[in-house]
Length: 318
Image (cartoon, rainbow, N blue to C red; front, side, top):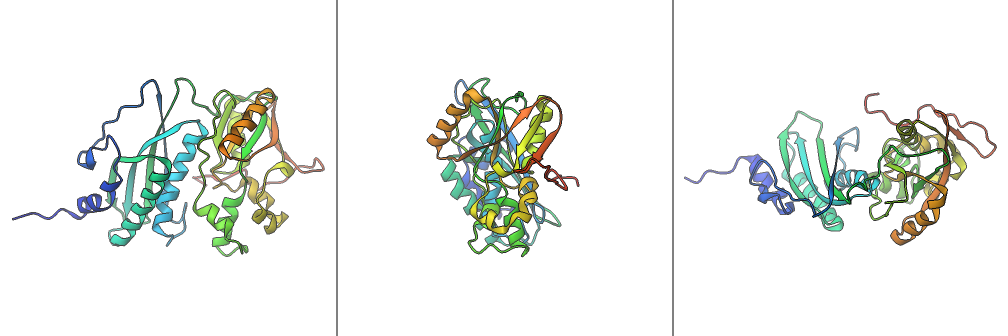
């Protein structure tokens, strides 16, 4: 008698085996075997997403898969790494329909093709809920070239990619808290754009991605480097959609998170190289302040008055 595969293994074979990349051993074993590119160092990062915390209940499964991959790719972008492959753990309620897994895998496959990576393996299990997802991303850099949080110095300028605040305003729009007639804000929340391809090696002295709020991420860079910072709120780049929401949302833009842009410390003499790198990658760059001696991070408006923030950013254990 031919024994049918248990649902877990049938699900893996049906939806995730087609995503398997080199080293995954066709997802038949409990571990993968991977050789990093010759002469390169591995860079690894992991992020989790929980339904109701990192994405709204009922969100389209393909978008959930793509966002899960992209928020992890953003960590590689911050360290100047090239994506290689990933591992994934998925805990879903037992009554999750097969169509959800099919759509989720389709979203992953779409972005795997875009970013040139494959699935190495992971784990699937059931949970009473909510849906919980975790992904470990692997990338590679030249030896000693990974860009860290530690490294900023007084006098370095603070630079950011793209626009800030769209992520949190997109969440507000999806919650019905503000109008988003163009749909731009909701799209930015649902599907961030990891800033891969921006060659920061030898340019940025420190960097990280903006997942938990711009001001809070600058504070992280300051703590790592033992210094302070001054942020010019009027210089922070906002999209047309964010500006249309109104000035009452400025504080949210500065502290809300979910942008997955990069914030960097760049010495003044390297700024021409940074702008050239941004032009080559097609990524907009804006100087928004500078690092200074001390320990305080201040945010000032156009008149030099402090901008009051209820919180600096998102806390995972608030």
